[in-house]
Length: 348
Image 1: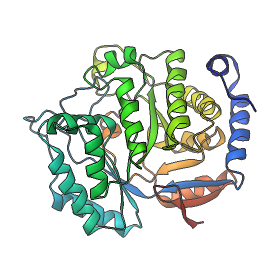
Image 2 (image 1 turned 90 degrees about the vertical axis):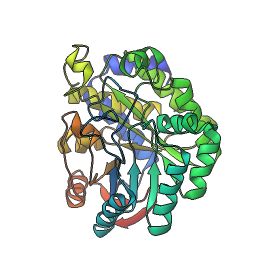
Image 3 (image 1 turned 180 degrees about the vertical axis):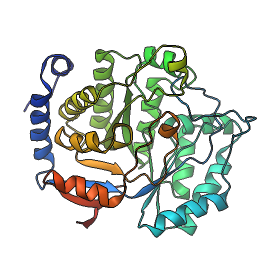
Image 4 (image 1 turned 60 degrees about the vertical axis):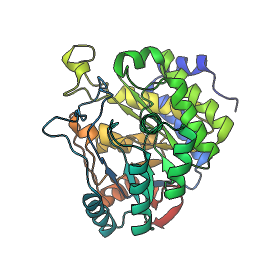
């Protein structure tokens, strides 16, 4: 099968009916995952601070340093959250915060080292490219040094957050203070070259065009060709509630489940070198999250013991391990708990 071109991807998005796209994506998925195993991970998203100076127009989570509800968790509070995760069999923490203007590399080193030494059984998957870029600037060191120093303390992998759409036109509208597309890609490139794996993400449903969506996928595919460092691709739709984009009338409505499944299926076909595609049940709900498994996704993502960023924008979906197992079995696939590296830990 020849590699899907940008023009072919655009045609699929615009012209092919949804059922056909689902069939095509399922056939492609079956070649990559012939054993019909659908995975999930038990983890906790720890938002260590909501203080952020980046002020993204699509975000309802951030606060400024002097706001009454601004916070930065201390190590004891973080320990309690990890202990709660371990009590339900969790294996991973996803660390993400606002881009705090006052925290430098030493604070992050101390945090990662503290967790790695106290909870060696927990994988630390944390700090977006945007956070890493600012840690470097605030600490007056290079991004490469930040990555090396955090990896030495126990950082295992980094999430794809902050990608949104890898188009500077879009970024200038929805997140004008964030790093540009080229720098996001370069930080992930440097992470991969330093032995740190990552995930790739996309948030659609703001002001992007179909062409910009496909260009985003092309950036991911090209970097994966170069480094092989992306473990998975995760796509979700913009949640407008309580955001500046909604207040200013730039984006008023959520995109439809049809649009989500359509783009998911084409992403599965286009990203032929990314083995794992994750369902976004957190934004779509459990039913569409399950449907995503019939449109190319092979991973149901995280049980998400805690999630605050999307919740602040109006999405409050929840799912536990038993629900995930049931949803996977209901479509005739085999559920398996995995770790961060997509290694199977337990079959159900």
